[in-house]
Length: 442
Image (tube, rainbow, N blue to C red):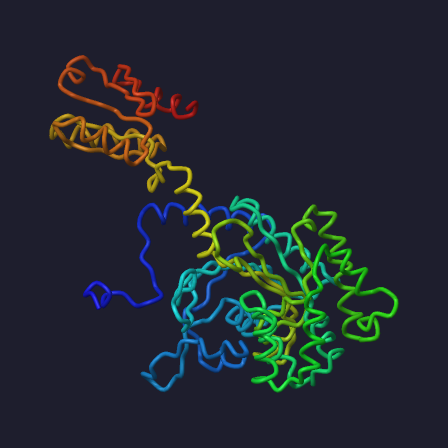
């Protein structure tokens, strides 16, 4: 092992200035979408009592990071932002809230391409009692707006309903006590073939070969939402004989028609193979998948979780939310920037004040006038002007203020347009106003 590898934990990353510029731009877009929908910002501790997290994630509970016991409390790093949010709602006796949170989460996963042990999630959740599908519609619409405004390219949102999934398993002959463990196997269909999943169902989950085949025939059902809805409701459909499935189909009809009116339905695929392995989902579930060349897998997921808050108090507060897997979105955005073959600006500096000499007092006077006018500016002292021009070019700074002995003597400064490679002299007293005009009309 190289000594450098000993300095950083596997599955974690450092981010340089160009990467951080892309990330900050993405976070700004995401936050603006959340605020457009009335979201309020919340934050929760990076670690929770272990009992808060345990029993909420199904087979993924083994991925929760436990902390060494140092004072009697058994703690774990947060696995996601949803369970801590539910705990917050319960502790504060909140009956309705629309919240967003952008923060890091931690998982004891095997590090691989696109899979990390520390990564950001961007969550938007609506908790409270509403009309059927009212908050579900808005959360899915928020997801489409996020992915559209981030401009990452083509994507698809797979959507299903937990009650429909349970109904399907009941129709296929799966015992109720095996619903969750069978769902965790179905959830692997985006990575494994059905034959591989079938083998797991039969050999590890104790499902009969016939039942597994029945599941296989139904999970192939996918397509445009309203068309699939009609197919599942047609005469003779076993789904129409299942109480939970009927409830789910009625709710999905409301959701699909609302999304159609909001010009978002064309991004949705009704997919019976979507299972979502987490135990706390109770209603609509969804997952966004990028369809471009960069292979990153799922980029967002979420659903309805009506019973999670009740696990922390005697009060049930229904909720629905979505979590954007921003690290995978960053990977797409970084690849897009590379393909543009342009300088990624890590700074927003608009003007570089270049003093040809060592006169810090003059530099302080000039750059302070720019700062006071709200212009983003830096300054440098040197006798080699080419060093300053090189720096401005490499960092994408569009304008320079050049001041040497001759300019000082004549009461002028020289303005240099880096992109056009043009210079002009202006009176020293007017240079801030001139730059304001130039920057407002690039």
